[in-house]
Length: 261
Image 1 (cartoon, rainbow, N blue to C red):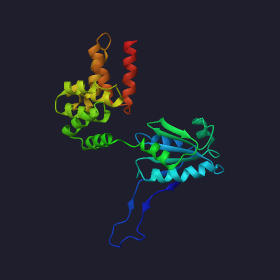
Image 2: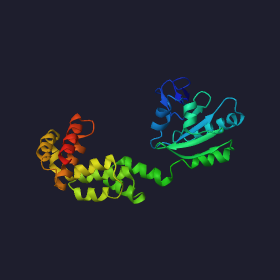
Image 3: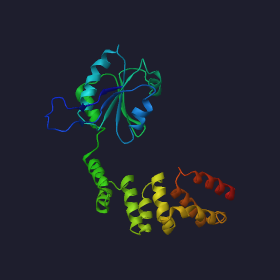
Image 4: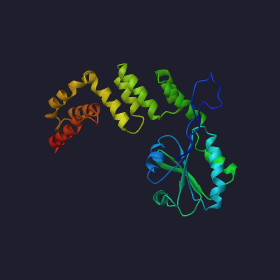
């Protein structure tokens, strides 16, 4: 259940104004059943402050309004998730709560900070400030959003290992017929699904110009994958480009395994 939806409708607004203006939801009530969606999924890049509390807990009732006020002031840069521990024992157990109020900051599926017990407003403000992006991080995100090559290169000067900038610039380099430049760029960071896809694009060249030609190329390569590393890499690259959602991908992976083992 939403505690604050921050939706501003037409009431009290100039009749000539358009309706409605919606501001980010920053405070939500979370249950055991909604925790994965409301916290873990939402915390993909966005910090979520989880407030574990109970209605009988005096310090919780003191801390709660402070958290709500300060998170609200971030205007959506931080989300507050309120969890009543009496009604949601599974979430409480997941955090191994031994005392309340207990407050944890979650980002990208991991607990990155937290505290137990009531805190004053200045201490809570420092906690919230530590979750907000720095000026450099904000500028990097702005440049990555622009998405053109000069902006992406500028973003990488500020944050050389920013995955989003590297993947986006790698795609531009592949499109500009500079596969070697793309592969050199991708080598800066650990391999991920996104970097594997761009690397596959860089190595595959003209093969991917016609996506429907990929299965025929896979059939051609299949009999030569054993004992030839280059052929095997080309086969794996084409599977990356075919994509995990294509049912043929799983079938070709089984065929590859059968050839190799």
